[in-house]
Length: 177
Image (cartoon, rainbow, N blue to C red):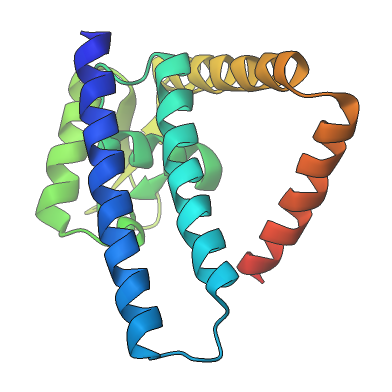
């Protein structure tokens, strides 16, 4: 099973890299953005590829590749980070149709990870929140990912390399500003 996942992941990475290369080559060849250095395009492409592989590895390390869809995982993450919310607020935040969110919430509720209760401000609406099982599920997966990443950083990088990673992360964080 893991070999199949790895083969699919490799195929996706190859396809994505090929598509990214074609776009970058076309952009460079056509000089659409002549002010953008080739190193910027290369750095962007490599960052996306590394980020995708790291996300996949972290999902595998936490065991969350099995039972939840990406949409379900996103809802759990949003609920733990932002707190309880109505299904319509979750749909708006995740940029999906309310019907799709209703199906996602129903699946999570069926698994015992979320619960619904009447909104104290509007009895017609329901507020979705994590159950104890949902909190434990998210906490276990976060702990597994953090543990794997911490150990990998300790095992695979020297102290100087970890300092370089921290410097690079500070630079990358500027992309969010």
